[in-house]
Length: 389
Image (cartoon, rainbow, N blue to C red; front, top):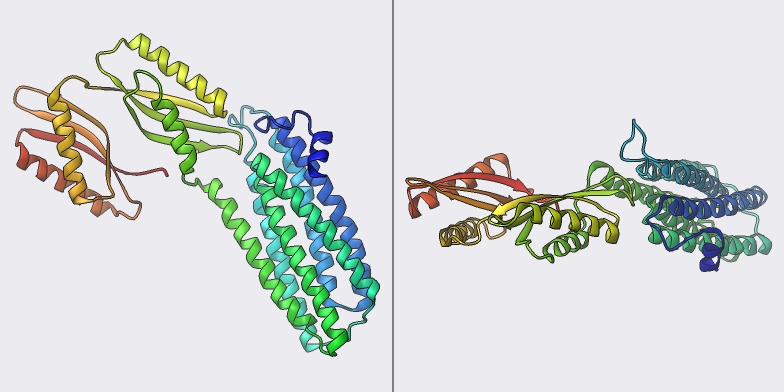
């Protein structure tokens, strides 16, 4: 059914990198979720008032907050497809992250409200009125919510949408919440013991923690998360597959939204090559990467020695020294200049993020000392840095 809806309402649905297609997906999920949740809120509010169940009433207002969340999804889908302008040269796609963060606050607030109401009901208990019609209506609501959950999951995966991934988790929360509500009503009927308020407390904690996780996951790309290892490997393998490229390093990926990604990378090229020819190769790589991935890649050329045996000798020596000092550190961007009375080595060393500034300085000094032992003529320019994956 979801595939049929996507084909009916999303033109060119396979082109998920296109902003208009992403917006159409978001509108489909948003309008579907908004409609279902308004219906569920109305139905559960009616059942909750008649049965005097705090769990059902809390569940109904949870659906109302969900309706608000889907309204945010619809607005975010509209705003995120706005083209870049003077004030926002990288586009507006990060609105999706802000929307998901706002949704997480709504979910956490629902959890806090449910917790307070459940505590009040423990101190001021009221008998629950049981009707099979209520139970059947709640089960029907679970089926509708399950459909919305699966639609959010499918579309969220297709377009890598943070708001829809958040909505998927929220819908899963609702299924659990309604299930517990139904169970508490059945226990109250057949065992003459009400766990309604205690079920509400458990659900409130569950809902709050879910909102907290969504907030954490959404803040990662806003603050600047590490580059995905698969994407890192895909770009480096692609660049290194071209003739004339010796190796790569210092790949940095910047995300301005799920489909607006920019990256820079250093590509090592032979220092005796035709610079115009190398420039044409680099230019072709950038265009090929954009066509295949939609990523705007900028490549910096690093000329590297390819004939002088001394270059390879000292490169090997440096790697050996660094490996002995820290097996997890890596050397890249190596270059060497051989003067009459001096050898100048320039290279970067990537270390773990746990390194302090003092440890970085100590590592650099130790490398210099070991190289001086090997040859007093060696002078070093070392940059100790952290990786981006």
